[in-house]
Image (cartoon, rainbow over all chains, first blue to last red; front, side, top):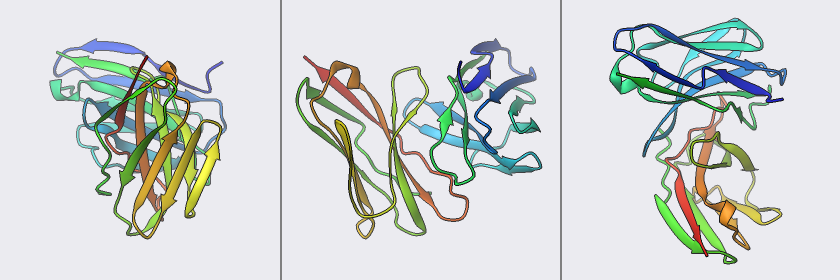
Length: 112
Length: 110
């Protein structure tokens, strides 16, 4: 069984719609992250959370929000999707030492 | 940012050795990761260096020079399955979160 799961794996939506991407982990890690990946730009950090009561903005948080519902769950929302949010989104986790990150399989999002 | 610089693309022959270089800003440096990412898949951890020198792990080795802000990933006995993107990710102290470079796309041909 996968340690870090993401749902949905693929999503097509229209401009202006609200959507939520979900991430769950069974690794028992406190730290969770959301990244987006665009061709030629690498992985960029959107939000991160070091525990249930801790939420921090990353380098590209505008247009996104997150919710840490439990230690194992971290959701990313696009309140009003726009086409330039079309990307591959990854959730990741790490232990308290902040070392090795474990990535989910990714969600491919297309905003029309 | 970390001004991470790594080549965009490299090609190599099956069975050969390839070295992927990465340079980064040294201020506040606290370790450097290398990840492998096959097309359309999640990045997976390859190595972590925090001290100067070479770390060897099977066919893969990673080198770090903190004073020069330089690292490389060395892949030996290349196999076709090594065709992937290789991400250099230094991190700074404090948040302990790595910043990812744009990746080097390695193409291994027969």
